[in-house]
Length: 248
Image (tube, rainbow, N blue to C red; front, side):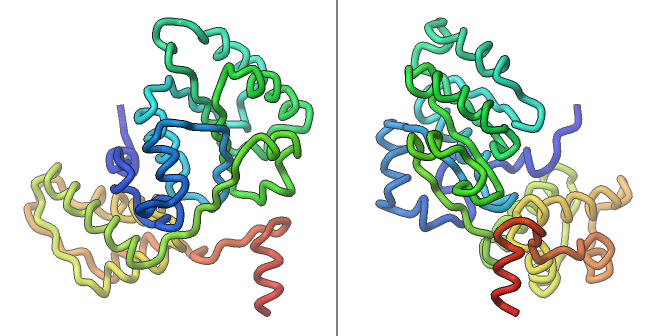
């Protein structure tokens, strides 16, 4: 089964997560909570490719909770109820953590239905959203959760991710890669602070290399071929719309 390079490189320790020093740096509140294993309901807010899903997986491992990943675009309250039926099972004795991605796609009634399971302690909820939670998440959920904002990765953080990706692909494929810092920086800047987008660019470039190659130089032309135009995040109805208007 095909596994994307971004999944292969997904961090398994807090110190491996790129960026987010304001959340996960030494002695920060969230880091201390995770290390103490005393997890409460949380909302992770920020753009794609900044580590929200990865951090939820690490939290589940560090607290020995059974992790269920759901996406609000396809999940229903019936899915939540089915998961809660596992409470008390041998495999879930230390609790259940539900990671609900894109919670803004749950309507008000669906979000209200979550309260029953949050309040009786059946689950710990970590919800994520790319939209401002104070506009899209039901107030009763917000009042029972702590919001943590994830920032887009800076170019320096993306460079570290890119070097890790290239080293991994080189070891896996047996190909010796050569890439200049200028080319790396071009990928980093074109990714718009999204680590997944940067890794996907490397994956696409390396997938196009002949299988019998032993050495390959990644060039500006390669990067130009895979670079996505939207290095700027824009959403007509969300925060970015107003941020851009304010800047103009």
